[in-house]
Length: 355
Ligand SMILES: *Cc1c(COP(=O)(O)O)cnc(C)c1O
Figure 1 (spheres, rainbow, N blue to C red):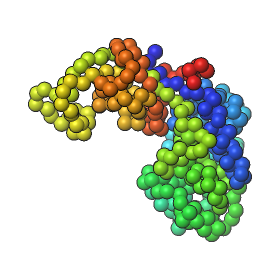
Figure 2: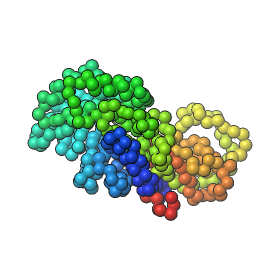
Figure 3: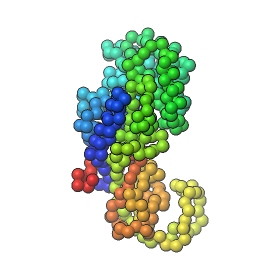
Figure 4: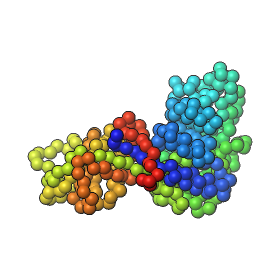
């Protein structure tokens, strides 16, 4: 059934190998972040077969699914758990991200009741203004957490680029290093960021006080996350989206009649004069972030969309496009998030001969 999200095992494998290579040069670990594709198990399996053993996700449900299917892998919870989630994550997640005493205390209580010790990583705010304890308060929190008997702070971590787009440049990484140097004790793990720091790694510049990275976008799309630039030796074509055409008609681009501005993106459209050949495809805002997909054929243009249809201009397309033709798209991370969440999208491995 269409829409169909296709993925390529070989392209994923190459990205795993390249990440291994660059991380090994600096004796870094990298952890595969699976939230971008809802930890779809066949893709997780392909990663396991490529040698990945440590994963991370934001949802405890994904962690349970992965651990059930592959009992030997590690899976971190990289989102601060909500109160009700705590029983589901303690003893299951390899490590849990924490930024407050309140959450750590509840994790400690839960671990005590399970007679276990839960490893945690404390996230520090480094300017992106998403999650993280402020640097001034960090030392005191870390000391208090060391007094709790059933959690163990195995490391500190930081995250930039994800909210305000703060870039992990030399200055930012220096800020991190001097923060870590001022801490009262050493840790096993310094979790120093995501796909946005990879440009530094590719340039073979050092990342001081970083022992591991959490990698989602680069693994799946072959780009670093700060500017979306392609990383050498990585594949950008792991995913492809195929959608079916359900109407092809020559139509005026300009609407006829008085228009209000409430409809989807009504303000942003610039209508040309004359008749245009338009194809309507079976895909809309309910299935995908349409702004994050792009037709493989550059002669096809996305004109606009609504909940369940996307309108294409195919006037300049050299292929014959008819009702029931299939149109291929490149996708970005934001599109993948929703495609893998929608129950109306089929996810399939691309056949070898289609690659
Ligand atoms: C999503 C996420 C990542 C992965 O980020 P990418 O830019 O996709 O590599 C890393 N760390 C945290 C805390 C995240 O939430």
